[in-house]
Image 1 (tube, rainbow, N blue to C red):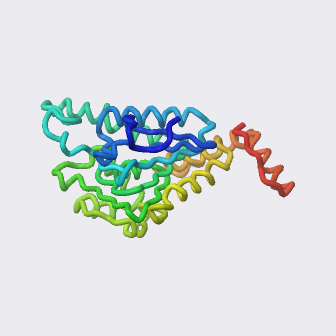
Image 2 (tube, rainbow, N blue to C red; image 1 turned 90 degrees about the vertical axis):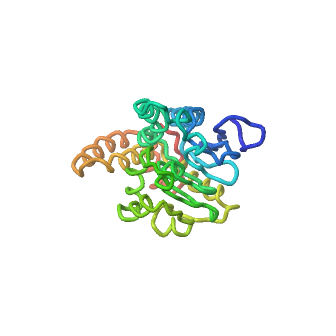
Image 3 (cartoon, rainbow, N blue to C red; image 1 turned 180 degrees about the horizontal axis):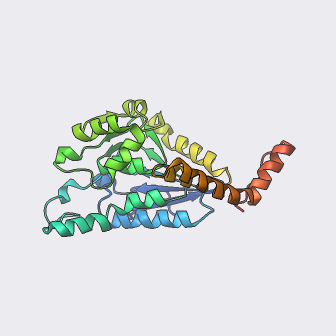
Length: 274
């Protein structure tokens, strides 16, 4: 798989694999990495589906090439007949459902953990893309805005569902109705991100967190993530039932037996994904 970003590589998403960790880089730096175009959506969906199907991929890092994480939609293509917008409103609805709305549905179904390394502005759908990820690490250069109202539109990619589950209803309402921009420190204060680091340390920190995830038994990690995602929508009793079923599976893995043996023998465990 390719490494690096930008340059002469025209692919919308670049992928680099290293010892169980897959780094995906949105690669439209000249446009600030919009995610509303079909080729970007297809590339991101394809890469994430492949990662989810491969148990050897223990964690994914998602970042942006150039100075921005993602500008969200391409404003230049918001005129009728451009991008997702069709002259026929009913077709615009279909374009959203078969286009950008595939991303939140996919992220919600993923079992492989995704760490967002937010290197710069994450605006509109770019902010929502960061919210789709499991963990968000921000560079000091990062900025966040749920800015749809500034363009006279609404969050069309699930932002109304996503944002409030991370920062709470009050802060999500403030961000959504004002369209105001948060800097990295403000994002940390409201829980939108879990860490803010210097720009030159962003990827190192993201890889460190991904490595900590990747060093754990992959089946247990993926099932634990599935429980967290399902808990956003389910009752406690339903989650307890699901937890019991997954625990029965986890107890039968070789990695669980190895973890118990390593603990008793006071040595580092050697997990194989079995």
